[in-house]
Amino acid sequence: MTTALYPGSFDPATMGHLDIATRAAAIFDKIVVGVYDAPAKNVLFTTEERVALFAEALHGTPNVEVKSFSGLTVDFARSVNAQVIVRGLRAISDFELEMQMALLNRKMVPSLEVMCFMTSLEYSFLSSSIVKEIVSLGGSIDGMVSDNIAKALKEKYRKLKESASIPRYLNS
Ligand code: PNS
Image (cartoon, rainbow, N blue to C red; front, side):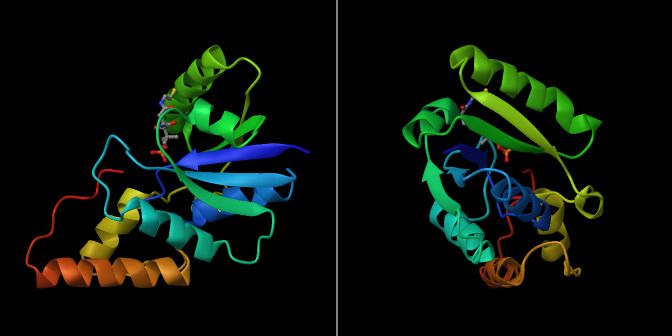
């Protein structure tokens, strides 16, 4: 049985993330989506919210489980018995960081393979940060995130506007 870990911040998951998770689920026996609890950037959603939102969006994909993790990705991979780390690649601009992470992860745990899935063309322009920016400025995010995530984003910014403080949670 091959288990793959798909780690990320997922603040929140976009259709691009959903696409990678479901495509990976069609190849591996099991996918564990790992929601990193402490990204080096401000997050809009709590760890619990990011897990719940992605899990709900993935509902219906039976071999995918969404969990939060802290610490090193390689340690979490080991704890869930993953042999592979899956990441999505959009453009050349993603490549340098992905290459660095892949090489460092494999330096730490040589037996752990890293596989990058090329984005689907229709999602190549998407990122969590751009989606957050669009929602915060009142634009339409139709087709960019799942319905439950669109609802959660609108609700989050409505509450932030009500409390009259919109921090710059846009850098992820
Ligand atoms: O969605 P992101 O923000 O691109 O995901 C980055 C993530 C969470 C996969 C990466 O920052 C990570 O692996 N963090 C866990 C800590 C870790 O293992 N750092 C060393 C990476 S070589």
